[in-house]
Length: 256
Ligand SMILES: CC(C)(COP(=O)(O)OP(=O)(O)OC[C@H]1O[C@@H](n2cnc3c(N)ncnc32)[C@H](O)[C@@H]1OP(=O)(O)O)[C@@H](O)C(=O)NCCC(=O)NCCS
Image (cartoon, rainbow, N blue to C red; front, side, top):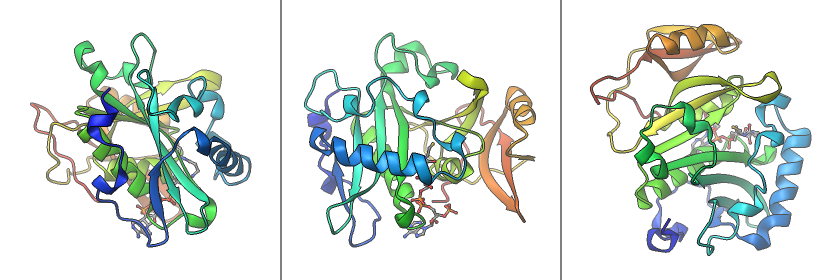
């Protein structure tokens, strides 16, 4: 992974951020602030405990992602800093490591393309800065980093009920292509976008399913559908499913 050539200098990337927010790739000196933000969000700011499970993280995260100078770097963490110097949000990008299992393994990505996967592995925004486009900006930044690093695939996984997060992935062209069972009876929807295929038209939704009707979503995915958008119907949150694109003619809309 040639991080130096790709350039971790955030000024290379066009990011839409509030004026008082500075983007910066975090390093090991940010570990304390990062842990403090993560503790604050997980202990008191989650809409539901299953929205973020620290036990599902890879071993040694986030420290493993904070030393971009290392040759065997596991990933990088994009950080957002406010005018007082406080870290208010982050998003991590993890790289595929040889022989290390990943949520991407359930997707039909050929083995020789596995090193070309960028994994949007974790993201949190402090509650008092939510709703200002910071998460959208972090997804965008990490996708731009994937392109700069010549990665072909962007993958991410969320709890199906965490629609505040996954709706943003779909807005950036990722599609829910598998629902898998993970430890402790939890499920994860695995989202994917092939960066080599340009985004084009917004695809027509064929079916809408309550986001908590996971078995129905799974059945539809098995029949050839992808989760393409979130729809609100009053208080109900619905997943919109569209027919999977075929013959490389990906039809996904960017609504971010
Ligand atoms: C899920 C989470 C990351 C979302 O973060 P966020 O910063 O509030 O998200 P954003 O501000 O980017 O988007 C929220 C809304 O603000 C809107 N918004 C407001 N100002 C905006 C601006 N200037 N630019 C773009 N969008 C803006 C967006 O349109 C968006 O609406 P949408 O959800 O309909 O797309 C955050 O709630 C969080 O940290 N949750 C707890 C941890 C978690 O669940 N992490 C994800 C685990 S998979």
